[in-house]
Length: 171
Image (cartoon, rainbow, N blue to C red; front, side, top):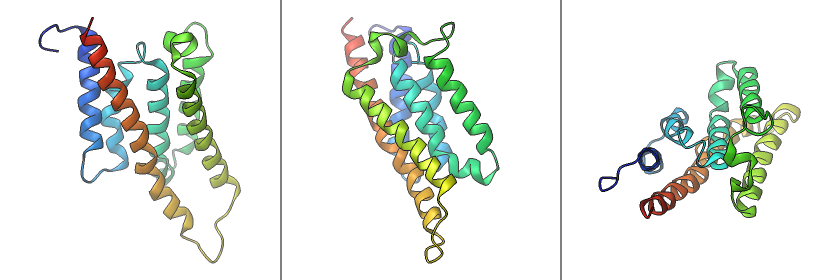
């Protein structure tokens, strides 16, 4: 970054620092994922699929807070609108999501599987009531999903940023 500064290297460095701070924090709250969300969003046109995936998983990890505040309808509407704008609407499509630059097949499969898992978890929360003998099981799963859903995705995006900074550094 210091030897040959460019805007792209700066954006990767921002995302790298924010994700490193999030990943190595001691006590993390669900809202802490908002810290690296902005620098990753700045990489939307370079790393479209990964950036869209990160934003959707970050929002998913905050659903217990949003449910507590009564904002689940807003969450669902904004997430679906963001996903539609990123993938379907031709005037707004992100080049790295809709073209062949979206990444290797295993990455696309991983993104589809994790987002499908998010949908399944939301459907289970809506349709299946917790058993009477274990009334707090839903609270347990909500507390597990927040940080544990975000950390692997954050680690993947962080490693992508580290590799891309090295790749961009060679240009």
